[in-house]
Figure (spheres, one colour):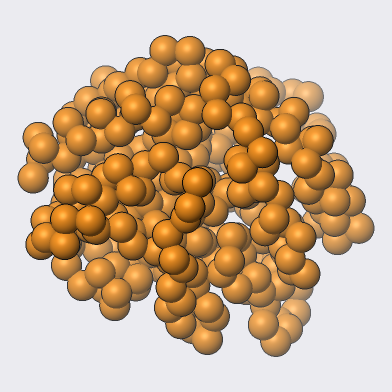
Length: 303
């Protein structure tokens, strides 16, 4: 598959990689695709061109991922270093909202997978009227966040301080990253994330593996696995007044469908929940035809 030509946008002296598909060359609505943890704009390989037939469809690499700059991770207790940054949802959502303001320059729909969904929600809060709608594909529920701990989780409450201490250590996070950044391991993770097995191919493995070979690729990993107190999607739904669509893989091994069903019941701006049977955490890549159909339906309903 041929990918869209990458463009570069400079944000806070960092290089941000992005691409655009707009075959119609029209002034139709804008879409921005936001990938999940460890992925990149190329993970939208079956969506960007398809949506670009009728919309200006942008895809972007979050700071630390894909072809974007990879500054060093700066944790809360660490002294500042040159070219270091605290990886967080505030950082990425500011990247997205500023990109929309400086590059897209007109109202946009935000589509995010996994942590890209939380980023989309926070960016939409910043953009206000310049965001027309949000589509969350298996949005990260962040079950390891401190705010989700229950007093009854005795073992987790005991183990948690040890876990936090361990992942703060560079030698630990670098070892974990090195073990994960391996084509064979990536394939095993994909087999869990894509329970149907659809579209697990060499191209997909390369999409995930190639960025991990860059010099500082381990830094965003270290920054993210140390985020134990940041935004939850449920913190943000009431702060955006625009329509929200949930698209969910029925067999997502990490983000509970039952919790997504509760979200739809609880938050009035969630207008629809579309469930993709047999799919896992990334239905936009595992079952792209059905995912694209649901996206287009929502876009038509809310234009």
